[in-house]
Image (tube, helix red, strand yellow):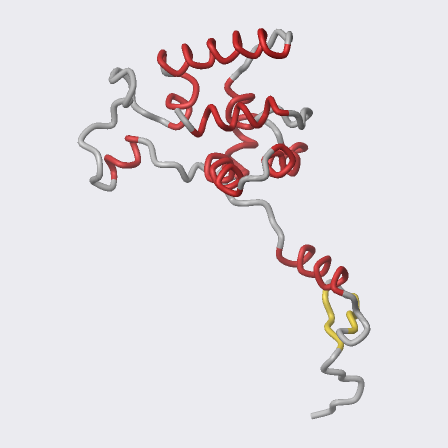
Length: 169
């Protein structure tokens, strides 16, 4: 077994040699990101449902730009990855008696129904839009993708308020 050319302090990653003795912290971090950081598997569903393949990075980073609270970041991440439990999911695992919506009790409480399609939630979003028009003097129309994903081209308080609205539904 030949050890010629072997150096335990040099890591080869993506066909590039990485010297661990002379590297800085920023270089280690960049190496970790290039080899480990990937979009979550459920991002494929976001692409299928909303066609946002070119904006996924912005969508996942949006809560970090508009909020400083980690529970806001966590909630939006769980929402984007369909981790939140609706009555449909709770019924499947035996924690709910019905799959009907908690608010309207008419339709299945699916993810999109809970945050947008329910008549009670639509009334909430109408009030929100009216309130925003009064406060910011801006006419706003919110569609399903605006509520679920946020408005990635904006990093102002509007996105923060939309996330808070979803959090308290």
